[in-house]
Length: 375
Length: 196
Image (tube, rainbow over all chains, first blue to last red; front, side):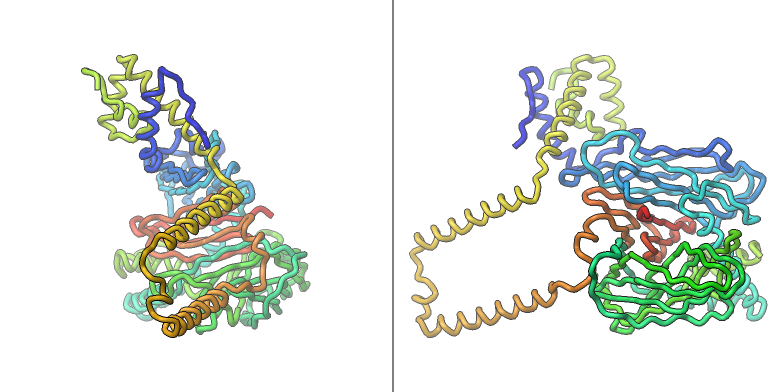
């Protein structure tokens, strides 16, 4: 057992403090000053206007501390070009030495000199003893309207934001064509259909861990189907998919480069059907590859996924996989050029989701205006 | 409370920042002039640090918890046995007769068997990753946010409190969430990745 050190002079007050602090420590307190540090390079295309972390809190959880750092950074575009996306790295070496995190805000349209908010809300669980800055926020990249990029790109935010922008332009073009053919009513119908697809998607809890290739693992083979995409520069020719309870692994992925250009990255999206017939998109399998023109590659994956359904109707229960299908969602060539499918392959893309939410909040006129503005 | 000073309770709460800003400001202004209250606040702060260090030192490992659990169970069994010895009421067999107690015991035994078998079926071990792999470092995406867990430590990027919709995805060695803020309409993608 531990004993509070005391002497005659302080014993009464410290004793009283012990009683009061038993309550005070149970409640939440403000986060320590200096817990958050924002680091922008001197030549960054954005400047930090203000940083508000007034709602940050610290609360003890057993022998550890739970630190909630909630901040809104106001950044200003200091260039003469419009900004279409921003990504920041969130680093917390003290508590997550085995990982890194990023916050990306795509779909921006920030004019020169304009300021925009970036929310960074982080929860840390860490041992009670510790000091120094808890979280460091660093700029990882900025995408401009002309698709030029600035930044260290440590978490491949260039690829993420470029893919978003290309898909968004494709989806807006499709909706504009729809509007020209059928007017605002046709776009409204599409927005309602997107909202309906979002509502019908089961809410999932997903965990990902390294499986380790050397580990003896059991499980049963799951049927895999590759979506036929004749226009894709890379063809998914096969995959080994293994499930064990709610756990899913993709030990092998096979692909062929149809183009004559070398490919350095392929993102394979996967969706699954459970034993009750429900279909859901659960993730993607991004892979750094060295795929020569017309070449073939077999990739070994050492990650395992655990997926469970959550929500009021389903409760929280593990998914039992019956069938998995995959599609090529993105290809990055050796020269940095990025390919995305010319038609939407996912059930709901990011831009469709954004515009559908805009329709829900502001109505069809706002969506039509957005389509015309970003034409 | 001494006349012209703040109470010990308020000074202790002021030392942790648990008072409203007006009261905190009043105490802070007073403490700048009053050495007694100022040093009291400092003592509370020191005491709080000692309590936190003591609490951290109190952390018990699993073996200690198991030992404590065993001791508690032993005490409970001892109490039940003592209770039976001093209880003047007749036992089940004496109260119901040997025959009635027999079929009731059989029903209880059958029910317990069903419960235990059901529990085993639900919790039966399935082949797959060794548990240790999930207990070391893993990434996670759920309704609250996406994060990385590593033992007792962890980092989670929290979604907005008023998000209108969220899409979750497991990526190779990481997790991702895409959501739209219900108030601003701003799209945000949170991503965590395990170090390769």
